[in-house]
Length: 228
Image (cartoon, rainbow, N blue to C red; front, side):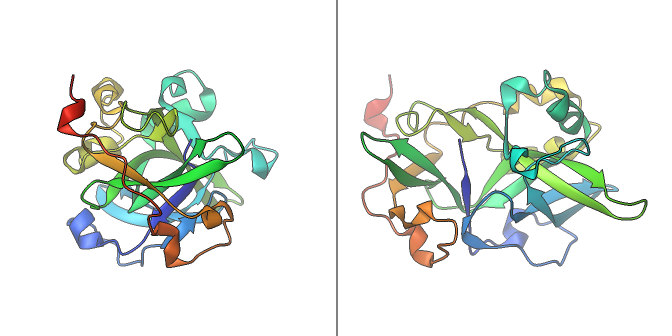
């Protein structure tokens, strides 16, 4: 399960040419849950990006530490906590990569997952609104996870769902029929993502050096020779 994001040097104009917001993107080489994260949403038909608290906090949630930062795609229609948000309040989190941890005998090795060509990724997510007063509110989000594909399954069993740029409007539009979104809730194409090991310094969320993304070994990626 993804617990950290890498958000660095992203071009908003390249990611979303129709974006109407001028608010700066929240960037971090090691962004952890319980922090604000920038998200793309449709607001009154306009594509905007705004900061959301990373950890879904519906009004009835009593303990902030219990706010989930990921929601399994398989449970979106089964858990009330996720169903309403998925039906009408979907968003995407733009990132340059995200971290996963490969279990090992005595420790876990962190890997940074990126698009093979290092282009930005749009991670599918949902959001909710918690009114603190009649006029003030807090918005929060959770990533949606799907099973890892065959290439990256040796590292982790779950990965965030990747929303193709051409499906962005369909995904964000609250009027979209949910049945048409099911084909998007699938593992990433084998050739899309790669992952390389990075320093265990990223285990500490306070570590915010650009060196978080420096490879300490070769990239794991799908090759033609692996095709069945």
